[in-house]
Structure formats: C-alpha cells, structure tokens
Length: 168
Image (tube, one colour):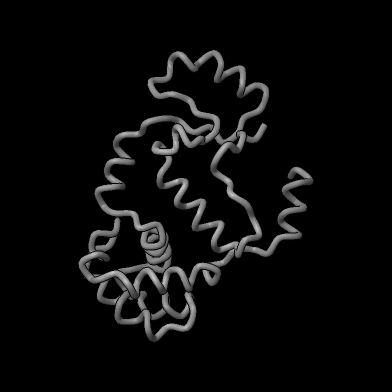
C-alpha cells in the first residue's frame, strides 16, 4: 500500500452510515410516498416501511433493523438508502446503465498509459481523464455521489471531482 494511502487511513476518521443518517432521515421525511416510489429499486411497498420507521429510529443501524424483514436484506436496504440519498430515479438508472457516454479513467500506470494510447482509437466511447465543467453532464451521478460523500466527511475532505487527475 502506498505510504500516502496508509497515512490517510490512519489519520482520517473512518466513514460510517451514521455520518449520513441525518441526510437520509431528511430525505425520507420530506419525500412523499409517491416520490419514494420513483426511486430506483423501491419495490414491493418498501416505501411504507421506510416512512413508518423513520420517526422511530434514532440511528441508521436501528432504522435498518426496523425496516429489514424476510424479503428485504440488510445489504439491499443499504443500497436503497444510497439511491435515496442520491435521489436516483428508476428512469435515470435505465438511461445511465444502457447508454454510457464516455469512459472515466480513474488511474493507470506507465504500462496502462501505453495500452490506452494504442487502444484509444479502437474504443467507441471517448476516454476522459478528468471531469471538467465542460464534460460534467456525463458524470451527473458520480458528481452527486462525491458531494454526498464530502458532506458525510463534515468538511474534512475537499471537492474531489472537478479537475482531479487520475492516479498514476
């Protein structure tokens, strides 16, 4: 593991769902049942359970424990909470999953750079190394997720999407 990564892991507080509990609680409280139904993966009437237990729960863990049942696993509920936080609608996910607009490079080494240089012309989608204001419309969900992650860090990390170079 690179020394810089190890340093960050040992000096920064770890992120947990409790960091995002106030934001999630707010989203569930202010959205109507109809709005919750439009969220990706909200099925089988789970929106009623979300609304029913949001007032009762004092923490994320307690909330998930209350909502969980035989048909809905803990992991599925966590994914659902991510979708609620990001306000990802069913139609948004269908479009994003079926019609990618570009390939976002997050990191590469010297060999990877040479490979990408050779293969670039063969790819049907453009390769984008960093998100800019010009191409931000290609990464709407990524940018939204980055902002939510930043909020959960209580200002300890800075903006991480725009103009950030891939890891090399």
